Length: 387
Image (cartoon, rainbow, N blue to C red; front, side):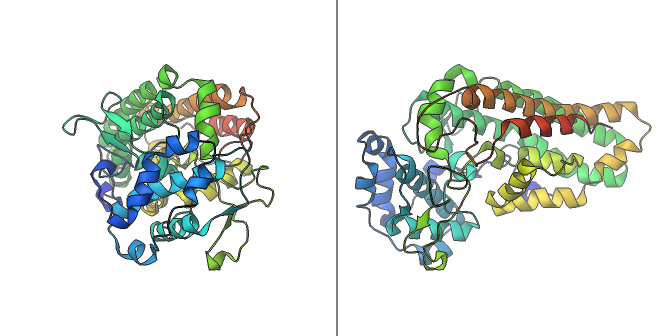
């Protein structure tokens, strides 16, 4: 397996191989780019729908089928932010998404094989750039390109995720190598790769631990989180979803798409696939299986291929080398540790907050699940599967 076969690299992992500020969209997007670039201003008026209703439908169906992937993904970033702002930018959400947003959003999503609302890939993976193009992808040298309200807390929340995703490139590259090394029976090679992964996890954990530096839990819950919810299982949407006007195949039925969530990140699922960590059937497991289809298609293929080809667990379990087992278990413990920190942040940034913002329930994740008890369960299952 080679990361390049999936549009990935050791230095960027699942992040875009390009930077969004370098992608030029054709002139038919000028009005959309202006609105997206001033989205904070439009939201601050309190009547963002009034302004977004005035956008023309650029009829993107033909363009979306033929344009370069980098352009379509860039359009996905801008349009998905506009869609989320339209739905959640006023006190009560609408029942319908107007055709001038629904039609282009669906055309773009169809080309990418994703759902027509904000995915993690458009929120994080494709929505960043370096300030100094010759410098590293580090918290001191990156910024969030497309915002909702903007501000340090919103920026930092996304920047932390970008830094984690970049660091995870080592995990993913070594995972692909471990598939081969395990099949070859190379114990020394496997141990070396696992030790490298353990060190990468330490760097990831260092980034994750910095979330509280510039992203305040209250600000996150009240000024960042409200815009990233989806439509599924959201009590603020009485019909159980959102009607996409002008999209004939949806037959004017409410579409119950799930919202952007860090659980759409492919890092932990890729590690579960490599280490063959299983989770018993529960609502979160079903939810995570469903979320798999919200990921970019190449990232889905990577996880599926790792899961299908990995023999690492049996190889390590059958080895007489205690140091190899220790290296394997260290990496498993790192994913459990990561899940624990996720759980801690979910408690402080979401579960302990309270507010009356429509659709922003502190007991339900942005993807639409009661997340706390299942996060604990999956963390514990992770810990229980050492060799």
